Length: 118
Length: 110
Image (cartoon, rainbow over all chains, first blue to last red):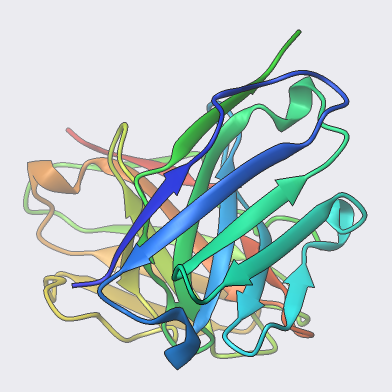
């Protein structure tokens, strides 16, 4: 059974970098699919942040592209999100998920709440 | 890209049907048959309910069905049950390896 688990600091100061890691079990990242980050602002909808493919190629949501980096560590079967220069507006629940063009995001982590505050 | 437009709320009595719309553009919903729908209960992660516009993952009841016409996709929940009360989000491939989500619809079972 595929499982994903987010980890990282729950509190980040403004202007600093938000860093989260998603550890995958039950499936090898290098075997296929893409691995994505999605966030949910408080009482709001979902926002796609970006994906990293098993090949290492990355694709980011244009409004966030200048601040986002997604990387993968296949030896640890995990992938990570870095979001730089954060502000209060980046306070959200951050989810990692497995996806494909055909099936959408079929497995999700439980989410990590990140608050941006001094 | 802008978020796909969904009605903020929808409701129905047990046993009835409710349909949620998801309106985009020819660059996303209208341009590709890669629309998916997610159910989210409070405090939980989203769950995939429909993919490729009409397909259901294993384990999703056949009460859930999807369709698309032009730039608008729809999710219909037939035979509403109390457990169907949740938020629902659509998502679409938007070309160039980009994806966009909908604004979300809160479904209430009266």
